[in-house]
Length: 332
Image (cartoon, rainbow, N blue to C red; front, side, top):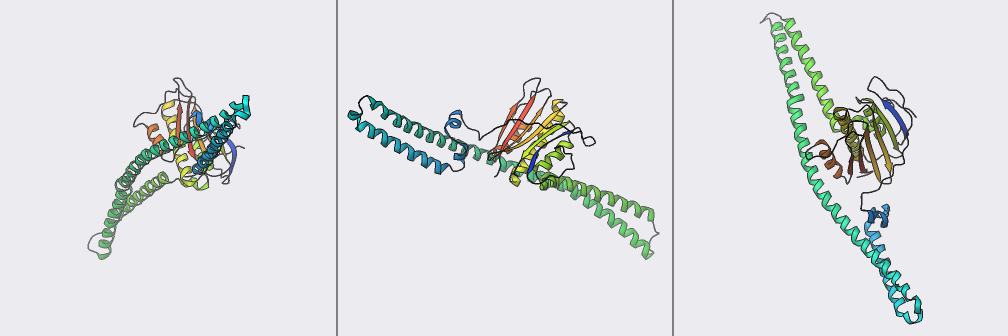
């Protein structure tokens, strides 16, 4: 299914692809499918021993594992008690005991993983608090130096125009209609500039296009990109509003980086929904060399993603291609 930047699909978007070469040109692209599979980030041992569903109710599954471990110990001890009767099969008692050891070791790993993620969330939450305070200061500064200053200038110009018109009506001064018209025109231009600044500021807080769903928002984003973008969207269900906003701004910043730094001729933006996860991937055929540096754009992006227990992965060898993958929980 081929879409353009003005399309408005329903909330549950089906897979679709567009190719965008800028706002003025939207040639159709071909549908691409990829066998992307992803799960919550964890060690190899946990991926092997723990199912993804266990992370949704960790206490319940930990209790089940402990109960299974205790049962295995009881079974192993019982088999050892009948070692004389078992004879050469006494070694079978080692199986449930070994299973119990594996179960309790898995529970220990889960506890360590949980503690690690709690510490990471605490650190990222502190960074998000600082980032939110900085954003509020930026919004206040933009309002004070931008829209507020424009509106004050508009009020002053309208006040001067009112005084001149009042003096002309009272007969205390000759009518200077050209000067009054000039003041009114200047006030009108200032009001329009203030409205534009306020609209841009509001769009930076929450893009209105997200009201129609993340798929529509990404379609519009791809259509406005300076680099031709192939878009692949597979979102059977909408994530939560907060996750949609984070995913949108991640995609916007990554596409901006492609246009500014990569020298790429083509980019691909992919958004897929997995079990409890949302994956956003931006790849390009540029020069590569992108990496996460302290106080860099990708580092700030990674901190905001980690605040919701997400992950940022960057693969960018010298000479390209660059692949940046954002993995987020589907709901906060």
